[in-house]
Length: 163
Image 1 (tube, rainbow, N blue to C red):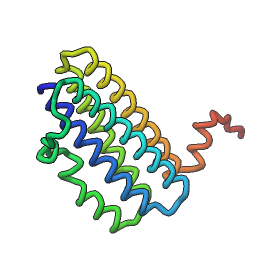
Image 2: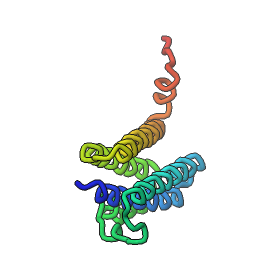
Image 3: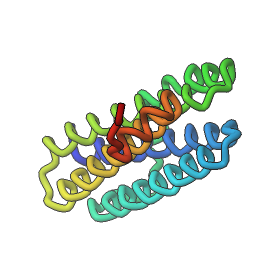
Image 4: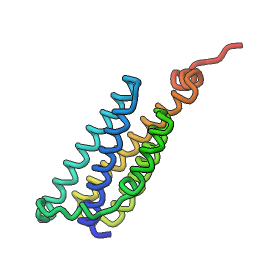
């Protein structure tokens, strides 16, 4: 995968993730859930800006909109994912779908890192891998909390159960 193609695909993925998180935030009733999705939107926007800067550094005309034709897992499944959220209106489902997206982003950036030839692209993909991993951990922790609040507090706070 050429680095410029990887960057273009990554930009499309970040754009799709931002759209997904915006829709999820608008459908989330809990204020903490809204804030979490809004935080993810800001992170994805920052990722997009970093990717745009890399493209500029590659001497690619930033006004050429090739990314419109790039298909990603997120854009292919976005409508299906959003209909699943609408049907259940369940915040846990939105978080579960976000976990899938972040996992796929993580794996994409790992592959992009392997094929990157310039040091600045390697550094950027390394940062994005760490960010996607952080997002995954945040979402997974939130999902665990919603699934089983009592046990979440016990394990997260390292409580000792006395009998």
